[in-house]
Each structure stands twice: as C-alpha cells, then as structure tokens.
Length: 289
Length: 157
Image (cartoon, rainbow over all chains, first blue to last red; front, side, top):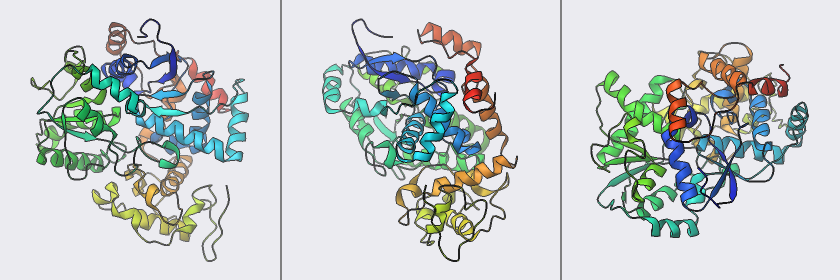
C-alpha cells in the first residue's frame, strides 16, 4: 500500500472491526492518507486497542495494561487510527499513564513480563490528519468528480471527539471537521436534529441501541439527506446493517446509503464505486455516486 | 488517585474503586440526564439516580446482569459536562467491573474478553475476509499466538 518513496510518518492502527469485517473501509483509509502524502508503517503485533466499551466493562485495569502494550510496540512514530474507538481508547490510556503514577508503575511492571518498555506516543484518528489546513489544500486540488447536489448527513459519533481531556480533537460537543471535509469534496453538508447524538451501537441493550439508531435515521431523512457519511466502523455497522434490522423488525425503510468519509474522498478523487467496495455494503447507492 | 471523603457518604467496596469514589462529589444537579441518549430512549436508565445511589452506598440493583448500567452508550456527554468533577462513565465502568467480577454480566463481555485473550482481536476472520484482504493487498492479520503474550502480560499465563 506504500507508494514508492513515501517515508512512514505514522504507524497505522487498523483495529478489529474494519480488519475483520470491512476491508474495503480499511483500504479506503489507507488510500486517503497515502494519497495525500502521509506515509504509513504497519505493526503486525497490534491487537485490539482494547475496546473501550465491552472489554473495559470486564476490567478497567486489564484494559489499561493491554492498551499500554499497544502504545509501546513501535519505536518512535506517532499512531494514526482508522477507528475513533481505538483513538479514544489509546489516547485515554496514554492520558492516564501520563498523569497517574500508580497506574503507570503497575503497567510498567506488567509490560516488563514481556520485556516491553512503556512508551506513550501521540495518537490521532485519521480525520485529524486529513483536516490539517495543508492537507485540505492538497485535497482541494485533487478533487476531480462533481458531487454537487449530494446532500450529506455527517454523523460524528462520540469517541472521535471525547473524552476531550485525552482526545484533543475538534469541538467535543459540536464538531465541524467532517462537514468542512465534505464541503471541500464538493457535496452539501446538512444540519439535522440531534446531529451530535450517539448512534446507539455501544449500548449493550438492543432495544435502546435500535431506538437511538431509528431516531437518528429519521432525523437525517427529515432533513432531506441523500447520503450518510461516517468516520467510525461501529457507527457504519449501526446504520448500514442497522437499516436492514429496522426494516425486518420494525418495518421501517429509510433507504439511506452509508459510506465511510474516506470512501467519499476516493469517489471525489476519481475512483469508481466498485473500487471503493460499495457492493459490499448492505445499504445501496442506487447510482448516487 | 486521591480519595475524596465527604461526610455522610458511605464507604463500600464500590466507593473504594479509584474514580468510582468520585461519585462522592455528585450533588445530583442532573446535567448528566439532559442529553443522555440511553436515558432518553429507554425506561429505566437514569445516570443521576445511579450516581446518587453509589454516593449513598446503595448498591442494590446496580451490580449484575439485570442492572440498567448496560444500557449506557458510553457517549461521554455526561463526562464532558459534569460540573462537580465526577467522571460519570468511570463510575458506570466500575459498576460493570464489579458485575464481571461477580460473574453476573452480559455474555458479550465474557466473549469479547475471551476473544481478545485468545487471538488478540474481537472476533475471528472468515475465509471470505481473508481472501478479500489478499485481493485488496491489505497486510496480514496478527499471529494467533499473540494471545499467549497478552495472558503473560496480564499474569494469567
């Protein structure tokens, strides 16, 4: 995936969901970053971040220890993630390891069992890198397809910007980065009711989770959206697979195609829907892109 | 981690867990309920009630598989807004950790933990995904024996 001559600036942290279920999304994120001159290195020993919701619900201490391991694996590069859950989990772990001496010493003791020396690199979700001004200038020049008239509902989700004490990206309650990016691609970003609300996916109660998803989709539909754009593989599944479940269980049909923000970038930069792997999605584009 | 002692609050197993002890700072203002998606879209999830109970040491109904704590979406909205310095999500995670410790939690929690400690990831790849990854020229997945290393680090080997 590394174009010749592009030196690695970040270690790429792909996470579990995209690696195991959404390889087309992983490919689109890699293409977006390297296409804009951001070189990536792979670390084959990276495991689950671990997941800040379910794994951490078993043991907060084990979560911190295994996050410390992932943080410490590479030599000297900062980390860029595909998934906001991974970025938030690793950033929060780094924040705790930097500020809580007791927690840091415990992690160091655990890591020493495998001769790993604790390291706390900077961790970013890829959207932070793509929305740096210099990168957006490059992106502006690279746009070749016409996306005008496509009304896009951006869904930010939660872990992309929170907890802000550790994540340090965009506004923690009213983020704007994805709308800015979508506008640069030439599509029309929309405002809609409860835009900044969670997708519902991490709730471990299915009824609550689906009720939230249904509300969000209704509100996007009411605002006239033709495309839903996300930057999180869990939000992606919640809305993509979620629409199938809502149709089956509640008889609600929304017909809103869901794409990853880097897939839309690929289209804007002249790649075909097939190259972006849209045929693997449950929600269908029906010739939109 | 500093332990905050507020007169009149309890000293229980729960309130002694680091960061769950911050529930002692709660003055039940209710800002955590305002934009809570789980509170809005379910009948029995109310973060303010949860923190008040923890503060008073009333554990009843909060620990275990039947507790409303599993409805939380971990969105961190309350975490951002709490004016008292409670880390609300950490209190809920402490309740979940206690539940796991007592072997009363959703199966998903046990499965995810077991999966990570077995092969390093949540889930295992299907042959279809392995083929697709090859076709898209994506790197190989981690070796499955990474689980041994993880268990070693956690002192569970």
